[in-house]
Image 1 (spheres, rainbow, N blue to C red):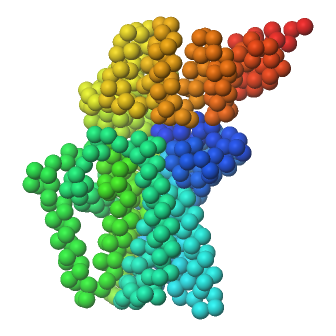
Image 2: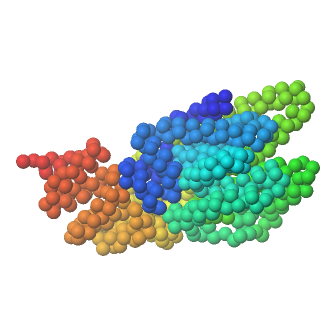
Length: 580
């Protein structure tokens, strides 16, 4: 029943397409194409957007099952979410909590979970969540098992926890969560409770450190948008906690990008959030003898599970927002369990009539939540639907303007795209991405001088923007300023060594300049990094043919045509090489 309700509520997600970041995770991810790519996922940090090798392995398997058809990816996400609902139910049942099934159902059908289920790139959430909950359940068995059997459960829990971390490292909070659960059950924490968890803390801390490093040095979470004082981060964290709690109680106007708050420690009302949080915590501590430890534990679980996403650690989305629905995928269960179990216990104490009324109320709540989830899942139909829905709810979302512009540009609607880039820059004048994208729009219109100015503006804001350097190199190459173009391509590669486009473009310039050995090396690197790069294969083939290696050129041309059957230049060149 729980699985069926979950699958029914999320049916629109099965008809959804690929949206933001899904190109980096799936459609444009060269690592998914080959066995070598699978090895790179595990052995080469930086080969994919984050070091979440188990998540990308699952996407690798998906790619080899159904290519780039989104339905298969969405089906796996949905099945994992349904599995998580069942696992949460079993965890709550193992803890002997009232209303275990009802709490799991409310969690599963709550619309704040849609972002994690209907967005393919959030495979990391639903996959790591399955391992997290499984590890939690196994550890509870370890804590309760007889001495002879218990260490088998411990080993299983440790393995599942490692898998959760390799899916997404926000699951590093599990050992702290286990401490709270054990304290709630036993009334104290003994050394015998803590010692087995020390390896969990060490492993979680190590892999969390890898993620923090990757966010800063590979994803790009560094610069003015992240220069926040500790006080500012505390204000953000406390406001975020109340935001997430509020969205669970009243899930209205959920959106993909929420407005980024202006944090100002000189504004008195911003201290109401930490003040209210501390007051609430103090009340729960004071009343734990009378009301039990449960409410305090649930609130601490909620806040503790959210810690990685509260602003204390720099992550890329802090550039445009401090909160997102998918951040509370696991954390939301704590407050939902608190509310549902309290209601279930209240009904139980008041007898059969109250229990029947409670079941009717639960059915009504699930119906409402299911309807909201159905409606929210429909916003993920495709990228344009998602960005337009975001802008309707958050007109100040400059990132949405920028990304909608990119989508329109790819469809050849350059004028509309240009308007969205202008709007993005009016909302955020220091947006290097919008300058870069508007520069591409100018270049597409043939205005190379203005394109060059926009690329230079982007680089003045963010000197490490590899895409802007590559695009500036293209403008310089268009003007036959070969030496300057090569400098920009090399600068792009110094920031982003796995940038296949920059390797291909540098090779083009080197070939024109007569450095065929250098060109050959960069063409081959572009093809190695992206085996599906048909244009690089064609360019490599032309160079090989010019060097007299016709056999190798034919191999590359045939592969280019396999990748892009409608490639007239490659077909004509192949026919010339095969002509007797």
